[in-house]
Length: 346
Image 1: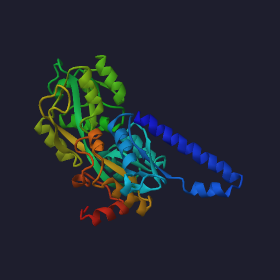
Image 2 (image 1 turned 30 degrees about the vertical axis):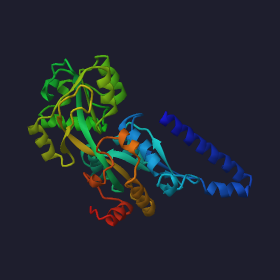
Image 3 (image 1 turned 180 degrees about the horizontal axis):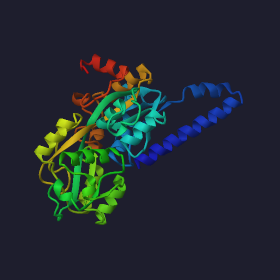
Image 4 (image 1 turned 90 degrees about the vertical axis):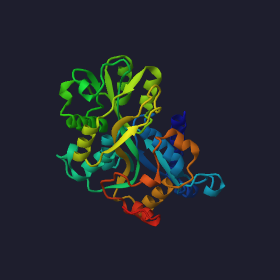
């Protein structure tokens, strides 16, 4: 419902702007005055519909958008960026978002910290490309935890047991796919040792429920909507990553951190699950106006976000204490100005 309302609002905004453009062509002075008051559309590349990136962009729309006529901040309105309307652009995720940002198809994007670092330095997945040295960060938003989901009655007990199984590893060259590849390397394995299925998250969910795959990887904040859904539709287990392999992964890839998926996070999961995580970053291009970058960052970290915002996001999302965690690329000068003001140093 929220997505429908947002889409209708954006469609009305576009139609409204179009009608004023027609009046301008006819020489209407009133239309020109009105057009000047139209909100600036600021596009953020998010993720699949109802995934956490998508939900986060929807939440940020409520926090940051403040079009003309909205209630004032101190009279019941949100305290966002004046005359700005944040637009949620759904995408397949991190790799697609980086490409859209480079092509100016979005104004900002949510991207895994490892993907951002590789693209900035032309390493990893992007070793054949020129560095995207205009890439800048506004904030670190939350840790994205690696989940490996299997059926509760599966004989898969650890990563090594994936050999010979049907495993959904994420869409080709997606953030999840790359994380899985690095994890397997830490175990001395690769995807050729099992039947790898390169589906996106919605397709992987359906195949898991139809028993067309034995295991499925997700890399997202916890709780992850897809895993929550699976846990309500069938009995599942989460496979832990052993401490030796976690240490190996962390020693070779500095953008990972060691973490646990807490027990009770998903239906039927009554033990903590050791795993690893990368950070979800909000990134922009260097040419974003400094004042706008400052205002966006300031609006993001206001301390009066509504209770429901934290109910729909991962437990660890939007914490100022961790707002600079895992950022391996430069901060945008506008964002740096805000962090300096509040005494956080990057």
